[in-house]
Image (cartoon, rainbow, N blue to C red; front, top):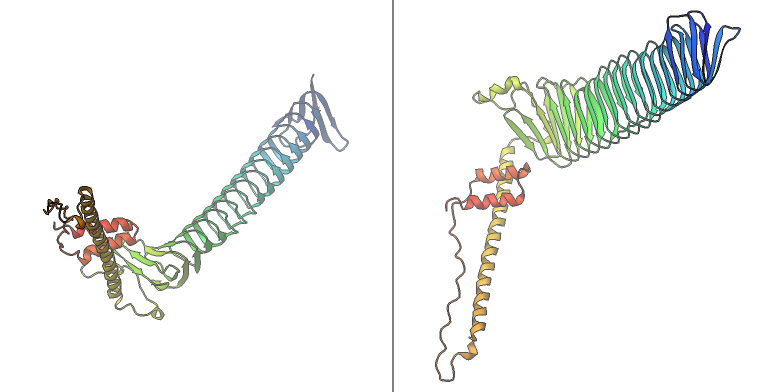
Length: 482
């Protein structure tokens, strides 16, 4: 049975829905009147204090004045609320909830998915057991979300507690604080500081006009365009930090860091490799530690390889300090497209462009470094050549043994042996056919040049070829004159 009731009110009445069982649709309108249609039982009355109370048992459609304040104590079913300029307070609710165009809103406890858009004031939420989508609000406070959370278009600050799903925050005009999250976390375009607790999976932060503070990260961490200081907890995966002012981070994987113009001291420590990139006008002193004793400093036109565990590199006046500490390789490079043409200048060094390479005297002078590297390369090449020659000699010996075994098989087949040197008639046995001769050893060709050996060893060091392929190249070069 459908029931319909109406009640004349003022422009800004207090509306209280004590209980709604069933799907609930409520919209504001310009009339100073409350109109209710319910497929079931309905109670609509106004108390002495001019508060309108509503109770319905069944699906309901409700119209209230657009300037009203709305309170829903209990609701069990899907609910849709739209166009309320006043305050909206929602108590304990179950079912999917959609709210559009309200003044300000608070929500106690909700079981189901929630979608709220276009809140003219502040928003506060205690607990949501479901996914939560929020677009366009001022200051927000969300205590707990047992699901995914998506927030976009915040005109003030955002305080978010713990979440058990993924978190996405985009476009905020104030500070962002997020508690612990079990899933991925993504924060972008924030005009303020960002603080995030522990993240269970991957983390992405970009376009922040402030400082970023992070707890631990269970996956990879990506930081881009942070105009402030970055401090992270432990990162279980890889770290990527591009266009950040300064950073202090520790990662179990690899790290790629690009600091356009560092303005604060930084420290990056990883269990893997580190690649760091700087602008040519950067003023930074880089203290490098590589447990693998593999440090490379690159620039347009050339590169230096330092087979040491520590190294100090000074760019510009070195005002800013940066420490790179890796269990693996460390590579430091610079982009300087405006100076690319200087490679053609006579006598110009690939490290000349706007760089001041002050090497730490405590590490020892670099004189003779090229000779030491060349000596190591020659020794390595000689060892590789000796190994190849030994393998060739082993193959020749195997071929000789095979030929001898074949000859012995021929003798046994025809019964020729030393104890049958003569037959019963005193005649010598017929001469057996001569066994095949072993393949002759090819004549020695021109030795491989040092330049060719160096090229092959460089390709092997850069992991462009395998050791077996290096051996094949040396063998091919040894036989090039044939």
